[in-house]
Amino acid sequence: MVYLYDTGGRHIANEHGGYLFLINGELAGRYMEKNGVFASLNGHYLGEIICMNRLLFNRNSRYLTTNFGECSQRSSIGAFQSPKVHSPIIPPPGLEDISSNYLNAAS
Image 1 (cartoon, rainbow, N blue to C red):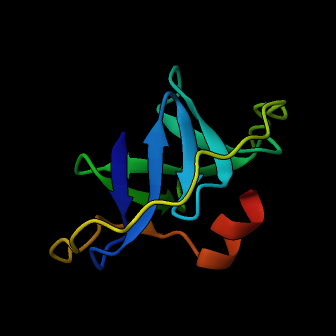
Image 2 (tube, rainbow, N blue to C red):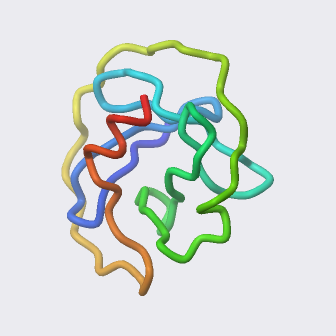
């Protein structure tokens, strides 16, 4: 299990077994290992990990218009207690936090 954070160091999601789960346990996407990005359940680019545990949206990603296909798995793994808050980071140019509305809409 990998706890994932935003730029402010707040826990926003978890990666487990190649799938992305919200902190309430709902499935939000899957990891596209070949491309190094997460896709939403409807197959659209969702974000990527930088600095080992920050899930961010890349405005310049070459996968913004890629359709990875829908995810047939629709499961949950149960809610998670948020781990400690991490220090904030300044994201590289072109990277930003994933909107919580967008992340929740992905599930």
